[in-house]
Image 1 (cartoon, chains in turn brown, blue):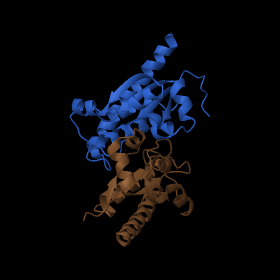
Image 2: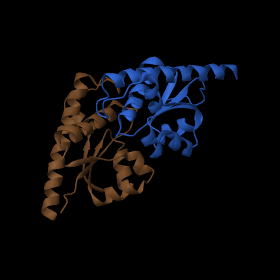
Image 3: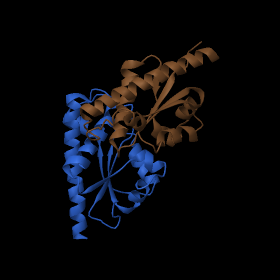
Image 4: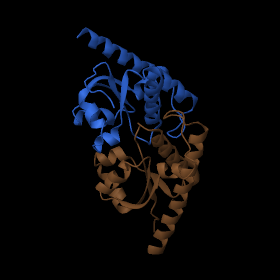
Amino acid sequence: MNRKKVAIAACTGLDQPLGTVARMAAYQVLDVLRPNSTVLLCPPALIAEVEEDVVFIQENPVLVIDGCSEGCCERIVRDRGGKIASIVNAQEIQLRSNNLQPKSRRILGIQGEKLVNLVAKQAAVEVNRIVDQEEVER
Amino acid sequence: MTDLSNHKKIAIVACAGMDKGLGSVARTSVFKVVEELRSDRVELISLVPLLSDVAPHTALVTSMPIVIVDGCIERCATKLIIKKGGRIKGRVLVSNSARKYGVTPKSASDIGQDGEKLSNAIADEAASLVDKLIGEKKDE
């Protein structure tokens, strides 16, 4: 039987550096930390209600990595009936981590990179937890 | 808060797709326009908040001429802005520019040196479009 993969949905907002932090953290989880147990979701495709993407989030656990308190990504996934298994919020991690400040949206700088690593690490922990949970439920 | 009656500014929109290097180049180039090249002349519209009806993106889309930087031939950004009633006055397509300059971004997560070169060239193209549109406005 095929194991379900965790779908990573990251903030695609462009107006705040925390959006860039969320995206870079998602890439780190997908490319480096948990490449075999995750797949990338595309929020614009969900908004456009592309059937393949909508069905996928209804059948697989979703880990949302939001940038700020607006929670746009969470809302998009929830509105399309997605199974949200966990949410990691970059702003909340920032507040718990000496308020690390990304330099800009384009260049995150040393503090921004540190924040990316913290968000990615938290997301990877959540991926493990979701995968374990799915194993128990099978 | 943005003065929406101020027509000396242009709104700029980038591809929000995360799965291709072309989308990452689109975003990097738009950030350069917004943060460095024309910071006093442009307002950034972010697609996902716009489509989730978050202010001020919803107001910006119908109040300013728009320049779009699309990543690939799907042109999602263009389609979504049209759907929201935006007036598109200029467009750059990253995949076309990649062919024109003969460079390809490394990946979505790391566009690499070629991707940086491409994003700089596209940022310059977009900044020129902004200048042209503001010049046109002065003549109106």
